[in-house]
Amino acid sequence: MRKQLTTALCVAAMLGTGAVNTANAFDQGDWLIRAGASVTDPKSDNHEIVDVKSATSFTFNISYMMTEAWSLELLAAYPFKHNIELLDKTKVGSTKQLPPTLSVQYHWAPNSKFQPYVGAGINYTHFSSEKTEGPLEGTDLSLNGSWGWAGEIGADVMLNDKWFLNGSIRYISIEPKARLDGVSIGKVKINPWIYGLHVGLRF
Image (cartoon, rainbow, N blue to C red; front, side, top):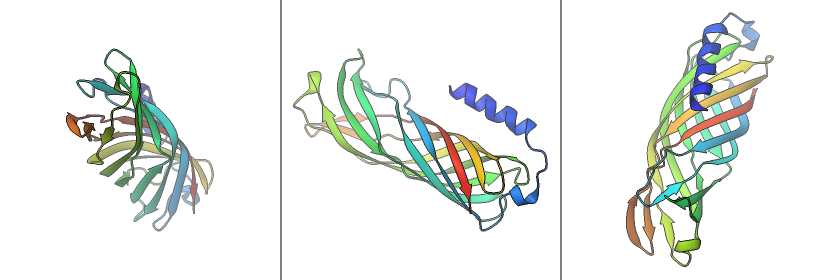
């Protein structure tokens, strides 16, 4: 999926950067709101004992255009709920996480109907509602909050001067420390790719 979405964004970037009515272009001082859904896909083999699985949730972000090309974006979401399995695929628990991320974005074709961008920033992931079951039932699982860097590539496709569609791919460094009954079992290197599709509004 990552390769397919990346290829689609790159092809569209080459084909869709023609000029467009400036009324459809983002301007300095514009606010952009995007809302939709995202899939969080953790790296495989993210821990030597357990494996955190993929999850889908509602996501939204708000961006402020500092110039026609540079913007500041805050990503937020309804909590993602991830199942946790042993390496033999036995489910042993679950956790919820929120990944607020602040990024600076560069839009390199601000006057086109298809507006690709890249971004980089910082993330803080908060974990909650950790639960155990099966072989681990009765133990206390806890995951600490995690600070990390984030990168993204995406594109906005203008439908008119207010509404647009958005697709994005993000990579976020998420490596919380895990404990069972207070005993450290090391870092869980979730480090997910996040694929998002959104509808956007400019105002």
